[in-house]
Structure formats: structure tokens, C-alpha cells
Image 1: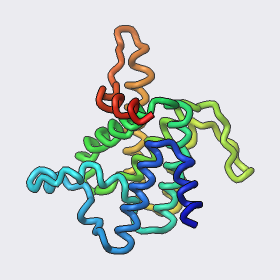
Image 2: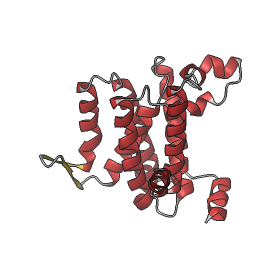
Image 3: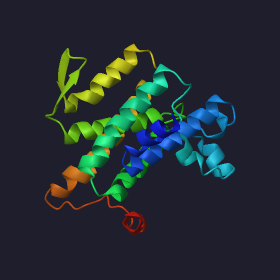
Length: 214
């Protein structure tokens, strides 16, 4: 079983694999009460007053109590994160990691308008699905051999499905779509406009780390 699990992890590219390992670890520790969700949720007062800087990142790895909701978001994250990293970001792990960092930063700002959003993992999932959908807008997706939709429609169909599953994460889903759209615009559209230039570029230190790891 351990070997099968390790083979499963190794089937993912490095950034997606790292995120998955962190997510599995955090959710397992919370499930076993070794770690309390209250110790990792996003709270700006605790970040500023008590210097809990880890809360700026730890919140994206927790998807709630183990169940349909958490599996829903983890499944779609690893599926489309793997696809993005393997194809759109092939050989550019540093840029993909910076995508996640940028997306989290955007949602940290959006959190100011949605104070109740304490765990933004679902938003990260929707951001990834949205970006994949934009980059594969015309690709047809076969859903349970009944419905065929274009890639660009996928995040909105998932948002509707999430709503009908009563997961109560609509605000997080929308935050993820907004973050994904802003990233896509800054990365793909703005640089091509007259007078535009590339806004998002991974730091040199990330490029060095990934270069040395190859």
C-alpha cells in the first residue's frame, strides 16, 4: 500500500505533488486532532498582532472536515493542477509555483471584502480550474458520458454543482475565479496590448532553485 501511495505521489509534477503532500498532511493532522484548524486559519489580527505569518499560507491547505466537500476540491485541484503544470508550464516549475503564490496573494486581498473566508483552499482550486479552462477554452470535456462542455465553461459548471451540493463555499469559488481571471489577464492578455508589458515574473531565486534541482 505504501509503495502504491508513493507511486501515486510520484505521478504528479513537483509543485502539484508538494501541494498535495502538504494538503494531505494538514488535513490528516486536523482529522486526528494533532493540529487544530484554529491554529492555521487566516486571521489578519493574529498575523499582525502576534506575528503568525504562517497563517498567510497555511489556510490554503485545509479543505474542511474529511468528506465529500474536501474530496471534491482536492480531486479537481490535483487533476487540473497536474494538467497545467505538465503542459502549459512544462519545464517551468518556478513559474507555476509563482502562479500559486500570486493567486494566494490576490485572494488575501479579496479576503478583506469577505471577512468570513478563513480557509481559501477551495478558492485556489477554482483559480486553477479557471486558468486551465482559459488556456484550453475549446477543449471538449466529457462528463459521465452524458454532457460535453468546453473547457472555458468548466469552472462555472463546477460552481453550480458545488452550490447544489450545499457546500456553502460559493463566495470562495467566486474569489478563486476572480483570482484566476486577474492572473490570466496579467499573464496572457495585458503583455500583448499596445504599451503592455509582462507584469508577472517569477523571482530569480525560484528559477535558481528549480534549475539546481533538475
